[in-house]
Figure 1 (cartoon, rainbow, N blue to C red):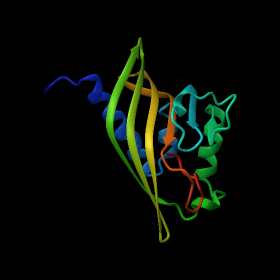
Figure 2: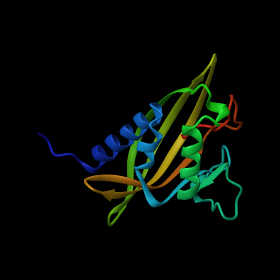
Figure 3: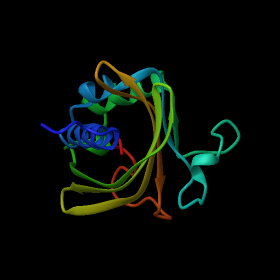
Length: 164
């Protein structure tokens, strides 16, 4: 068997993350997060969104670990009306690149397209992910996930009632 390169290991991790999100296995997805994890969606169609500071700029989403846990609990329950019934999701991940390695942490980018089908509506979210991954237990954990959307307007039922 061939040794697995860092890029291959990162790709596998991102594909597994996508599969969890597609299957609405949000508790399992939450287990991929570090205790200090952040989930960020900068302003739409903003060049350099990954460089913006969510403390001084209005982000679409700027969740810390506690807010993520609350988001997951809400989406997993019956009070998330924007996801009742749940959307069918398909995450497409491509152009995965390891940008930097700093000890046990890695800066990673990947392009994405998320297809969301709910009732008769199809919404597509296109953009780039920027991750800060931390090596843990033979795999990785997500310390930061920044979702830079290329779209200029949020459309569709529920807006961002899903985790991209």
